[in-house]
Length: 371
Image (cartoon, rainbow, N blue to C red; front, side, top):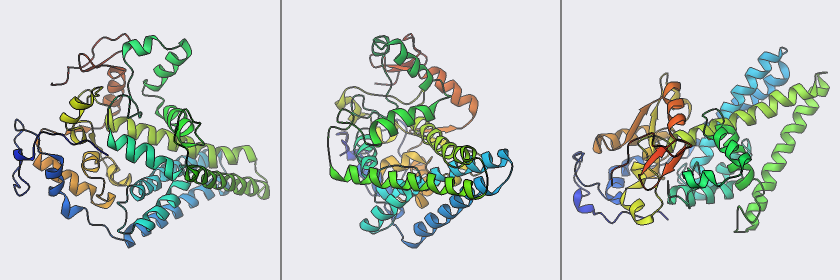
């Protein structure tokens, strides 16, 4: 589904393993992917073990929201459970990309199992993420994930909607954005306006996650009653807090993957294709203390967009290979909260004429992207 840049593979033949000079023409995506072929091999046992272990940790933490006594410890268990939901979702994300194991049917089964705890319908995520987002990353009017408005579009909104956009882009509410704009509008029984295509599998996958959600709440409710605890407190820390943390986590992750003063958006498809969007529109965000490994290497994101078939357990090596072969081409950013909120301050709207990010008044806050 991804448009390939017509700029040619001549710039770097497939058997040329020397790094590409920063001022040379970008190699064709097919050439770049040949560098990563050894890292696209998938195994079966490892991802199954990863999924089982992560689910056992998640269920232990959810049990903690019932078994521990102090509300603060319950809250801590709930927050940690939300993080584990994010980890498990990343495994499902690979299953949905068919990059988890060599078996397509097994990938679908594992993907659906992994998506249960985040209440994500597998087939709708497949359409929105694999087809739309990966097929047309940062192409305005097609890719809808964190797509920036122009100054004119923002001005035409109602006062309430402008306030909501300000909240989304404040840096404090990525979870609100994901929960309303992605999960509620496009994932959970979406209406015909948000999902014009109607397929029975969409309904079945939504019924599956609904049943899981009902069972999740019911188990916590019964456990609270049986142990003589406040049902509201147990549901808050064992269901609401984990789900809200998960929404904040995925909203944050997707935002920092594709929002940066050096990352461009495009509104014209030909220019977008020539900009090598599989490399130029993604950010490799680095963290201290092995946080990248704790998030199953989802932050090694350039390699993932170049070749979705690379499994999460080989992404670190694939990203390193890309950065070796394409020096100065990939946006690499060391994470800090200062950088994050500075990005949120600068990246409010986008000016497609000047090719740069602006504030809410349309004033440029970053340098124009190269033509």
